[in-house]
Image: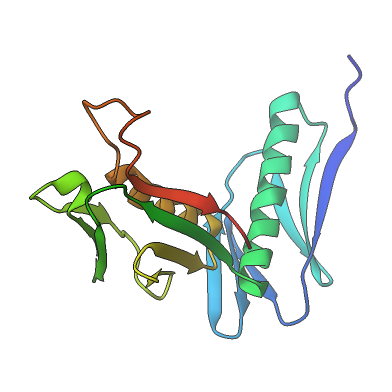
Length: 183
């Protein structure tokens, strides 16, 4: 199989977004918001060049090509997060017992799901500055923030807290479900 001489992904930085590279740590910032991530590999590197970032590897193997593409996608997500932000929408669904949802500090509480006496709790591991969780219309939950992974993990924690166990999932469809992963 023919080996490619080099792999290079260029990520353009929009106006107002600045990048700084300190060893393996890349920090993107805009208007006081900043996202940092460590990119460490002995053959793949991230370089800064006039208004852009470049993920570079010479004489890559298949795994190194994959790592370069993944890093480029992470950097694109970081720039998009600083520019627009990410937003996941969830919907609380119930048939008989009305659920009540509440955000208290770093906990998301679901009360009266399937008539249960003990409330279910989902952990919100990040501060409200990183990930905002809002409840709209008593049954809609909006999770938003600049870091795609933190927003997605928070939405998954809320969805997972409502998992119905020891019942037929075709009949007992109560829970909180992700309905959109818009940007």
